[in-house]
Amino acid sequence: MRAIEKKMPATEKMPVTAGSVRAVFSRIYGNADGVRIARAPGRVNLIGEHTDYNDGYVLPVAIDRQVIVAAQPRPDRVVKLYSVEYDIQVEFNLDQIQYDVEHRWTNYFRGVLKMLEDRGIRLKGMNALVTGDVPQGAGLSSSAAFEVASCYAAQLVSDFPMDPVEMALLCQQAENDFVGVSCGIMDQFASRMARQGHALFLDCRTRAYEQVPLPSRGMRIVICDSGVRRGLVDSEYNNRRRECEAGVAYFRSVLPDIIALRDVPVEEFEEYGGELPPVVRKRCAHVIYENTRVQRSVEVLKAGDIAAFGRLMYESHESLRDLYEVSCPELDALVDIARGLRGVLGARMTGAGFGGCTVNLVEEDAVDGFCAAMPEAYARAAGEERAGRLKIYVTSAEDGAMELLV
Ligand code: ADP
Ligand code: MG
Image (tube, rainbow, N blue to C red; front, side):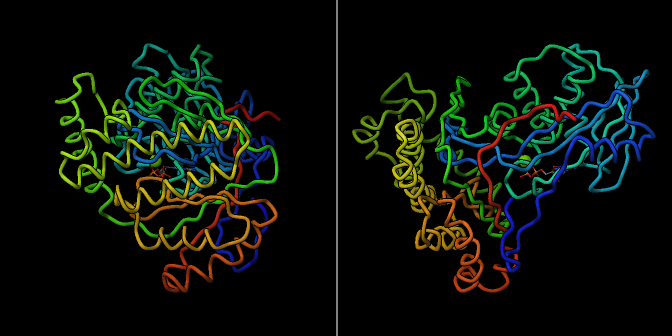
């Protein structure tokens, strides 16, 4: 992350190297013999919101912040895990991996090891360490980064075959079944599979994916965390899912082949959608057109038309605000301010909504101006208190998980 004005309430990015990780590891475990280091990034979704559970399309990138898991094999079945950020170490046995109610942060790691063992992969015991600079709970998926880094580190230490897609799916399963959070496949997929300079076009039904090139220079991805966290995310999320299901049930009555909203073509929606109750109709309209926007995004990006992509981002935001109704005044303010700033090509809320982050596509030479102007304008629109919690992360599209080599 580049240096930004002092005023900017950004959380600093942590410069980590294999050398610095090994040094900390040695301090905790006495030596770093045989240690292997895996890193996996957080992610941000550029377009395709609330499409994943409708079997649709998403277009995330991996960001330049990561979770790192370093691990050293042990001759027994004991696992030790130390967190640099929490300065706590836990210990458990691979033959008895249980959910930890006291140290909940360990469950991402435990869950991944449990899923591996349950698949019949016999792991080696490990001394392990975790550290990271993906902001936690901000919607940039530090949890998926932690899972993927854990799985990758386990693979480096215990040397079992596992292809990248399988790893992403196993990590999702760990979050669903062990941690108990029902997330889709996007986060783990992006963290494992993303490629520098590319967005990852993912079909959430078939898991077919494609690396879509982003402009090779002159552009940055800027994430604004509104600082807003609203409790109604879960209940509203469940309402949206129900409304989508109501839409599917209706369309299936006229078009029997339809399994999810992803299967409803725009023409059919326009022909038959008038019969739907107004709220369900709005929700369906968002999902159906959002899927076409993701497909269109892939086309325009391949054609190098970044301005057209930016317009699709704005359209996505308007649809999330007016049709899906998952935005909030603070996210709308961030997008409206961005729209008025020089060098901003597109902006939208990203994630489930009711707070969290916006994602902005900004010309590189306009990034400093963006970061300087945003806090003040946000304070005027949303109040000083909100603006005090604003965080801005300047990033670009980075590589997915890999080993960190000396
Ligand atoms: P998000 O995925 O949006 O960041 P989650 O609530 O899904 O938010 O996951 C955040 C949790 O992941 C944290 O509360 C913590 O338990 C775990 N986590 C993330 N990064 C780290 C880290 N560097 N060290 C230990 N635990 C971490
Ligand atoms: Mg998460």
